[in-house]
Image 1: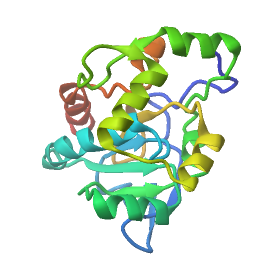
Image 2: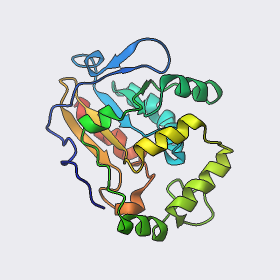
Image 3: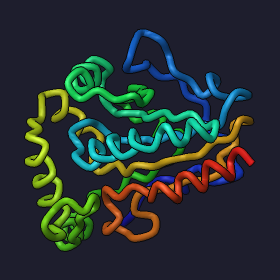
Image 4: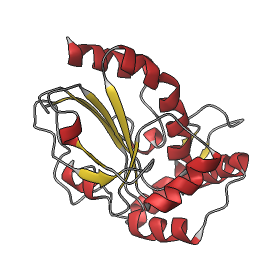
Length: 217
């Protein structure tokens, strides 16, 4: 994959500030909310059109309480308008704290790669087979895997989703562990280790909890 961006924000660097609309209410969520108070596990997703992101939201929700027990707060940024997110989570509630960033400003600040959609990339997407959550009968080419998971969800894209796709695809996702002083201590960038075979894969719960422990040590 090729990308015109600089490398992502790395461990040891200061985490870029952000201030985003909360999904749960009218307030603003910012990095300053956590600085000096608690480490932060920050997950940067794309829009709710992404079936892999919807799965990862559920996965993160299952171990968020374990992060909190270690003293680490969690924030998931979803790249869609707040009202669209509120409608979705009205029917699929979560305990996660969520912020809205349809313009991907936080992805840009943290320099999360967005590959160029070259003919080579398009061919690789068709040739690379994935089953990131293990729920498909067998690995499928990436576009087919996304459609299969979407069908399992009975999810129907809205006009808002389609607009998000047009602006965002093929933006990658990322996760950062940020200490109380606002320094990144760990990150996981989608596809950094496995190439396209890593699409939709969440780091293991054990890996994330180990990063959290190191951040609070």
